[in-house]
Image 1: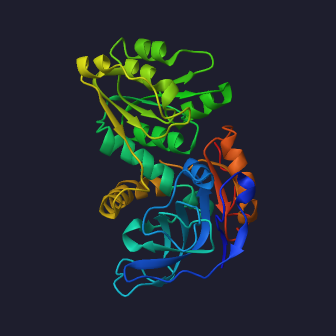
Image 2: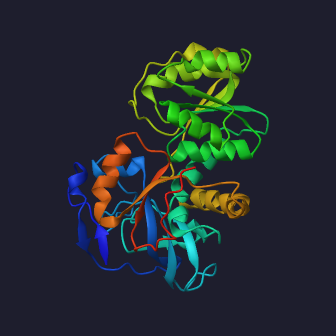
Image 3: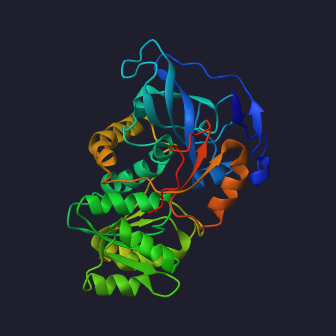
Length: 340
């Protein structure tokens, strides 16, 4: 099969197609013929040698943390899927390929109304956002949340999930175009961080109380301001560290206002934890994807042989939603640009 194999680390130019053996199913695995996958920030780190796959290490290091495709083989103990089922899957790696193996409990049925392109944009970002909002922050309807980088893949998913669940949603972004885009996703307050101080905007919006949780992808540059934006007893959930991973921390803020700081990452999590997350997410959201209450946001679609360009585009920070990779050539009705 064709796959993007990391034989060395570096810039986007190291992403080249190789021929490797098609994977075989273990007893609890399904083999998926990949229709689409997508590019995530973690893929950029892995390409640079900073985000290795979890043990046991694969024979070939193939990036790609999600896919949508068709089950073409299954292990002896697999009971949830049959050959020919259309599925989405959360992967520990391997999505940049024509075929991938996946434990059956990390896959779920593709919502019937979604195209392959839309389906390929869901697993990593929506699961990350779902985990951050509910498992890590423990938010309840009516509470306030601040979501940074809200025009990106995880951010746009988090805004939709939060608004759909009845939260009061504030968001940050870096351009007037993105402000309008995020409002249309359901945010109550959108702050352009180039023109406004989000701490002051949150203070005014919340009438001085602050937000119950902050979902942050920025890290270093926002740590102090995030803590200032939290209400007493609030939770900061760190999903990424785009600006850096080290920052001074004033523990008096944490102690005096009983704040909580939590981190989250899907790839390194034990399989039982991921299994529970995947199944809970599928049960709660499939109907919303079918009816269009939740929508994967697609910036653009590129073929597998343009994966290097896809990495460059994501690194530019100019995208609205996901960069999807069509591993199998899509028909004209399967590869729309679907930005609202």
